[in-house]
Image (cartoon, rainbow, N blue to C red; front, side):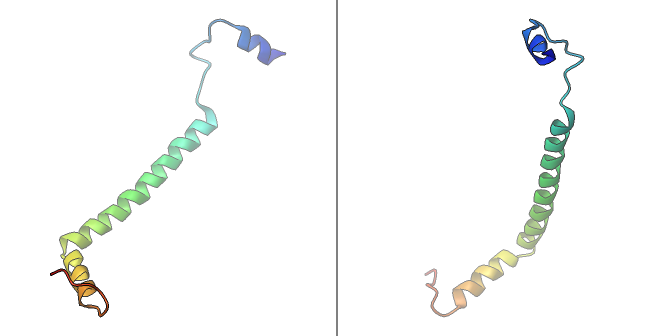
Length: 70
């Protein structure tokens, strides 16, 4: 009955509405995913800066059965 009375109120007090535990968990999950994404991106960019990408492409082109880029 209390829920019905709460929904019937025309105005909601902005100081009583909070995101709660679910809001915290969503923000924490987004932060964790972002951390691992940035960590992965940092290692991949370091590999590209060292020239590892060019070496990997050349090694793949030298393998038999692979079409050459000519």
